View 1 (cartoon, one colour):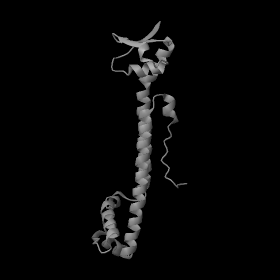
View 2 (tube, rainbow, N blue to C red; view 1 turned 90 degrees about the vertical axis):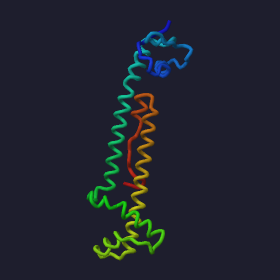
View 3 (tube, rainbow, N blue to C red; view 1 turned 180 degrees about the horizontal axis):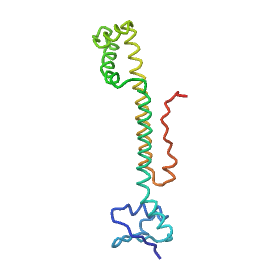
Length: 175
């Protein structure tokens, strides 16, 4: 005797049957909006549908939590700087990388900033280049971590798998 549940045809019927405990595709069939599965109890079918229907909500909530934690970690990288200074970073980065490739390269923005700050040009450029590299490494780690967590969320097929995902954006070497 087969257990049954009413489900739309666009649901992943094979997945629901597997959640109920029947991975054999020959032991299920679909007719007129009803999924019939042999070898599982009605309670298992009802539970499988509940998990299947609830999983997208849990995945969305976990993705939201992941993205919020990622944004918080990225914001921490720039927390000590005002937005107007952050807006100059791309220019500073371009000039520092040019200087790194060719110490004679023009660096007009940095020249003015270094002079105004009363710091030797090469010292200012070396500091800027170090910060450029640190930021690139940290942001690459955080973006890669966010993507890995997102992959795990999308691959999760149960609430337990979602709950086991660790959302942690601690940078390597950070206390």
